[in-house]
Length: 242
Image 1 (cartoon, one colour):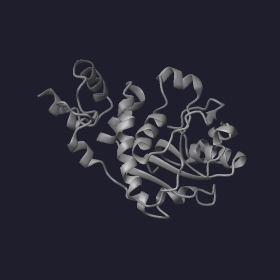
Image 2 (tube, rainbow, N blue to C red; image 1 turned 45 degrees about the horizontal axis):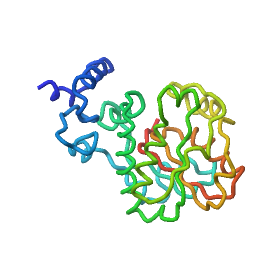
Image 3 (tube, rainbow, N blue to C red; image 1 turned 90 degrees about the horizontal axis):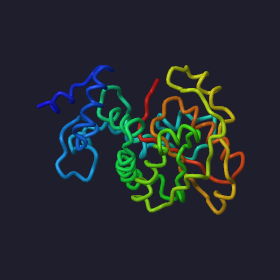
């Protein structure tokens, strides 16, 4: 009975109840709280079906590609789902980033991989690059959530993840409460590329969890293109329009 209430969580205060349930009922859906019975995934089928697909992976000139137009020469870009607050995808990403549930990222990455596999637009990508965290933040979290997403993507697409090809060399403030211009200024000069790790690559896919303004990914792409002769494409799990 208690789990049926999780499907209508709408307030920030409800997060505490969710966290307590995670302690006592570890095998519950990270999207709605429903009890899972021998499920290989950390979320239920109903939540998978309810995830709001963008279809961007099949559409040239989609909203995500337009974010980077005139800023950085991205070959292709997409987000697989729309990000909406108080919805299953938000809870899934919350568990991935803040509740030590790396398997959520791998599972969502596999779903994203299936979308890219059938899109016909990312077939020549030969490596996955997770957007890096600042080293101290990654140690605190225990892992980089973008790398976990890459692991799932890579399993489906059959291409490797290069977790150390990019480094975040400057700590940045949280982007959450910043406007568009503040986000740009906050991340400039924050990334460094290990050129040796990129040798022999022609087309890389930069991966993140959520795209909002694209400022962080833009700064990362600039660092790659300044130092390496490769094509860069972008994929995120979700698109959150400001």
